[in-house]
Image 1 (spheres, rainbow, N blue to C red):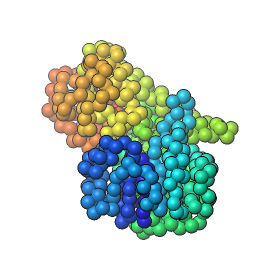
Image 2: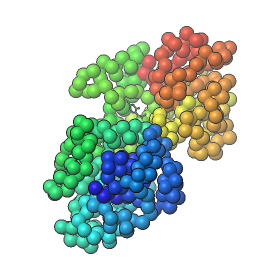
Image 3: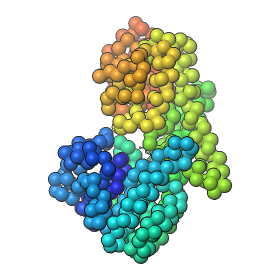
Image 4: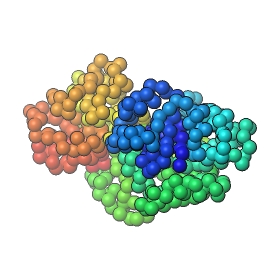
Length: 432
Ligand code: UDX
């Protein structure tokens, strides 16, 4: 099939590249000429394990192309995926849909034959209706169909999540488009993905409800972890104990810092805001947002306690500063609240992240980026393990001097207290 992906951010680029790998002809379009030129040279704008190889392979065999020419890319394609950003509005909590609608207006100018226009960006319920209205101002309704096909991929696992999704959700109000999409996804369905066909509004809401539910699950276990700390229980036991109940499930039950990233914070706010418009109070999700907002301060309180309320001049090492492992993404990472808080109180902070230096901390004189784990850890009073990269799981703490009363705050519970204590260091975890 001939596919056009509009927007080469996370969702657009990964999905486009994977569709080409399934044998389709794909053009990935973006306004950013530098990005497109770089992609043509094989320079990938995001950190995503495995992506570069698939880009190079499919670009070489000409199934994948990159372009800034929206008009011709639309004309040549049968299926158009809208994958532009839907960030939180500057003043408020709702999703800013200006890019989606502006792309809709552009598409309407270039429809030369029947096109399926799909929102893959996360868009609030009824956005498809709005998009259909915008396009039908220029084009008769029998010339196009607006479909919702949300994407559930995780950063760092995006390729795997695309190829082996738990489910493919297609929300369409017309049967013809549904059949075409079922055919597009046939290679994934044959590998075990469930294909769910719903009306368009339901598909839009499935995406938000999924992210809100996962954020709720994480927040739930984070609050249980707070309780565990008071009553000397290991939250890891609780996660296993409740996760084995199939009704609950074991995934997304890892306690840790506040959840972050490009989706959960934005999408929880947006679903609440959309529901508010319909006069529905999503009180559970509201309290999840509140709890997550307070979490970094709660963890910083513990840091204060660990350092006996003496943060000034303490050498603190941060291992990992992105919102989770296997990504270079800093969006809504809890380190963005924690590092400035500690820096402003006079701590000397060295951080190491496998994805390198982060400009977000440049304005702090007492925060520096180290080029290795060992350099970052040298002379530390406290090491904070902020993300769960495999590189950190294999750290040999034996090499560190035990003369200093070194403390380790393992915010991802990747080490056991016994192991660290046996080396002569003080160990603190989450919910243990
Ligand atoms: C998420 C959704 O999982 C994905 O389906 C959607 O398409 C986009 O948003 P992503 O933001 O890439 O994906 O990361 P994810 O792995 O879901 O983690 C989100 C946040 O939750 C991170 O801060 C992570 O550290 C945290 N998390 C996740 C936990 O704290 N505990 C867990 O058990 C799982």
